[in-house]
Amino acid sequence: MNDSYPAAFGRFDRVVFEDFEFSTDPTNRPDHILAYCARDLFGRGKWEIWQPTNDPQPLGSKDLLVAYASGAELGCRSRLGWSMPSNILCLHAEYCREVAGLDGEQFSKRGLLDALRVFGISHPFENDKERLQKRALDPSPFSAAEREEMVAYCYADVATTKRLFEKMIRAGCWRTEKELEQALLRGRFVNAQRLVEGYGIPVDSELWNIIQDNREEIRSSFIEAMDRDKIYEDGVFKESRFMALALRLERRWPRTPRGSLKRDKNTLKILGKRFPEIENLRDLGKTLSALREPSIQIHNDRSYCYTAPFKSKTGRNQPSTSRFLFGAPKWMRSLIKPAEGRAIAYIDVVAEEFGIASLLSGDEAMWESYCSDDVYMDFAKRAALVPPKATKATHPETRRMCKEVVLGVQYGRGFASTALALNISDQKASDLHYSHKSVYRKYWSYVSKLTEMGLFRKCLLSVLGWKMRIHPKTKPNTIQNFPMQAGGAELMRAVTIKAIDSRIRLIAQVHDAFVIESDSSNIEADTEKTRDIISKVSASLFGKPLKSSAKVICYPERYIDEDAGEMLEGFDKVLKRYGYTHLLIPKGSYPLTQTDRV
Image 1 (tube, one colour):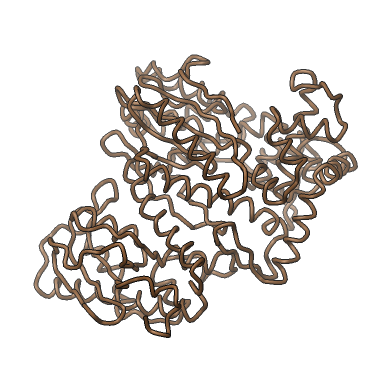
Image 2 (spheres, rainbow, N blue to C red; image 1 turned 90 degrees about the vertical axis):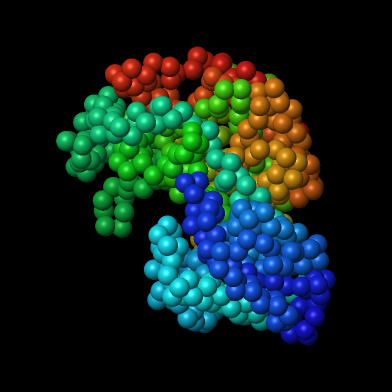
């Protein structure tokens, strides 16, 4: 290996850069492969092929594949039946890691051209890239000149990817064996996630077609049924009416610097917990937005969505909420329905971030709370807010307050926001925050040291090396919550890899939950296998296993979000106008509910 490259790369016989140009099928997977270009790092081989068929350079266990968006290249290899690499370095994942947390428009986009610009590399087809990408999707025949240009463009991606790789090395990437191993793990996740996205989510196409064909009528029906305070007029949200309602409900309603009432997602979420009127408007707003221009892609009774791996600053997937079915309004998730003979399981990591926080900080009291039957009641007892034998049934209001505090404080919420959410005085909210810091002293000591270290080093690292940059505009609560959020992302990636390797059909990740699909006869076994993977992987990452719970939905049942409530009932009434009478599921219909376990 050349001395200009880190010694960690010496393990590889070949380092190959490659790129494909292709069109996609309705599921966004590679369909017609137009061009293939590749080259070896040291110039031992170079390939420029129009409409490739045979694998020109089968990759072995000691070869490294380097590509920018390697999921696309791996999809093309799979489509052609070529060798699949054991070692993958995805420069898109690595670039996302390098710029995570940085402030500035130039870091918000993550395409190849964006990465090249940040590293000062020009692309010979920069002004033609969009045109050529559109041409690749056009099924009309290519002229000889077009074929030549497409191959040249494909090879330019290879050449600039190699230059980006070299610049990233000079910037300090992959200096050690450990850093390279972590990067290769992210590459394995890219390959696994390609399969997750390719499986798709089973849906009720009959119901989807009703929604598509009657969007405007359904929108109007929802407004008529749910807009009890008459905030909308002719389908248009009226700010003045909302202000009157908001101030009638809460005179302390937060305001923007310009004095208008805040209507951002976080404010409405906080106050929606107190006021059904606000929660109703929040749900209605999401519904009208989703029905305005539905972007959910459905083909052959399945929904497909690019999940945008590594897009968030903590390394989590960040799929478009308008395209991802689990990002749709909760009533719309009732579209999810397994096919005949099939079943799905929704497997949730219980109180994931609280559990991770307790283990990373080494706070024994926090871990004991996590292992208890009820995290929030355990905190209440430790803070002497309830008697030792109190339960959720005997002290529901105190538990509600403690839940708000436990969840909010860990995200860095101030006591004023807690006071607003619970409709209590600032002093009482401050006392509750102080109780949390007294009960979980070791955790708060960890947070203090973490913040100091992050500000000093200008970055933080997760358990598997995901990096977030810290700058003067970084919010303190972003620093505080990074290890838990990034730790959750690492857990998601590691579980995904293990599940796919174990031949479990993982079809979606929903923040701290996993959705799998199987035959109805195998779903219990696959659910237990997945939960076992979660337990073992979390123990390997954090020292002790996290709990999980599961609910299983077998055909002919459908997925019903437990919080869909009144919106789902309203949707059911609307559907009956169109002759669709089998939406709502009786309470307790899930045939299997696994108990939590440590």
